[in-house]
Image (cartoon, rainbow, N blue to C red; front, side, top):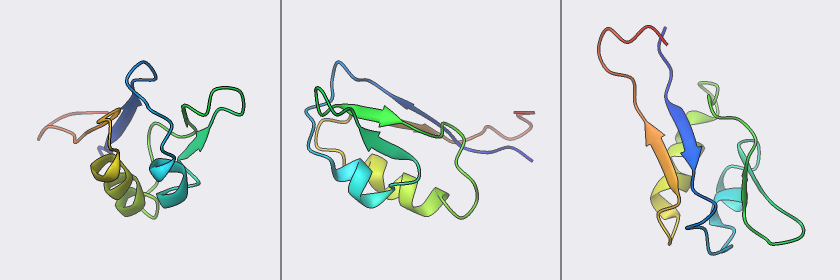
Length: 74
C-alpha cells in the first residue's frame, strides 16, 4: 500500500509551531531555532489527517505532503 510522504523546508519555516501543535507525533520544533523538525516522513493512517491539516495550516508553506501516484510502489 502506498502512503503519503512528507518533507519540510527548514529554510522557509518561520517557527510558528502550527505543525507541532496540530500533529505532535509527526512534527516538533528545534529547541535552538524553533524551526520545524520532521519526526515521521511517512505518517501512519492514524496520523495522516493531522499531518495533512498541519501542512495546510503552515503559514510559510514549509511542509509538503506528496500523495502517492496511482501505481506508485512506495
